[in-house]
Length: 182
Image 1 (cartoon, one colour):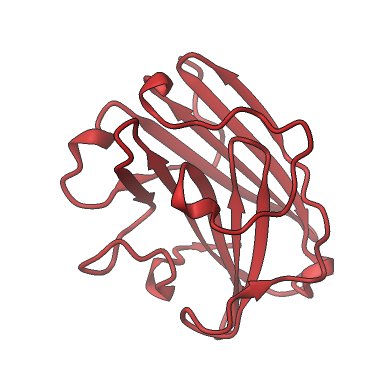
Image 2: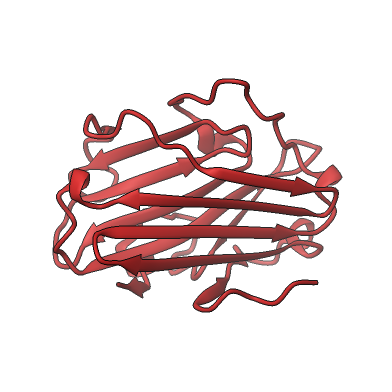
């Protein structure tokens, strides 16, 4: 097993979720000037998950969170609005802008493509993305982030993983879950 990347965080399942037990998911967020680097490394019996095949032409898609999806929520510190980033193991993606807690969800028109790198073996999936913050108007702002994921199992049930789960239900949009400051 490879070592953890510097700054990597273990994402924890919501509640007592035995389906998530065989999986180990680390996420890393690093900022270099106006660039945000994200990395997710999932280890475990990937054959037991519903993982889509890599799309020949990845594109912007809605509803990615309904299946296995790696996510990041980011906001300028002190700003009520935030972004939701969805990355599918198929290569599909979306970046949404929200005005406040679950309010005004819409695709962010400033981003028209979001290529990211995927590597996969029988028990390892790695996804990496570098995002230019200037196009989002966040190049100079201190950031608050939540790193999250949805794992869809073979039976269709989903596990919800995050750095923290501050509410009584799995809810990645809660600002008290945006634990990372960059």
